[in-house]
Image 1 (cartoon, rainbow, N blue to C red):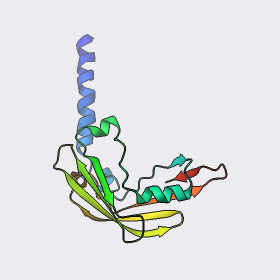
Image 2: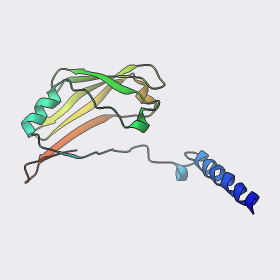
Image 3: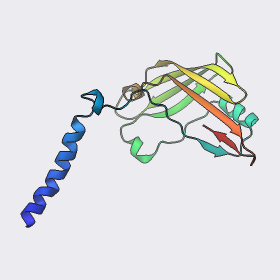
Image 4: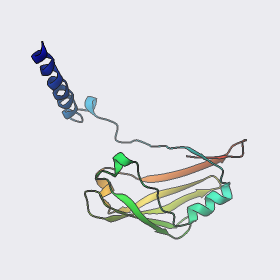
Length: 149
């Protein structure tokens, strides 16, 4: 009985890994590559404060622990404001690849949003992400807080 249980304990991970090995080999076993990621947050910042912060050269916070394994992290951000035509240059280093820059241009700006288009990506992030743009939206809620997405 013990040897049969041991056999199944080793067989189950092998079946799972074998199944995952077929991911992407056909359209039925592939994920949609055109994904959008949204991560809404609530803040007490006003829309004026948000606009000001978007115009600053802000640093990203550290990434979650699991993503820090072999994944490049931003080490500096520089740019020239938050008006249309402005640029944000994000420098990534660490991880398994060489350091590099991702440069975004501000292509649209409204009272409640700003859209960044990727101009150039020489970072190692491009091995995992084929990002095209980033849009930040915000709306003031009745509670006085601001939802950013």
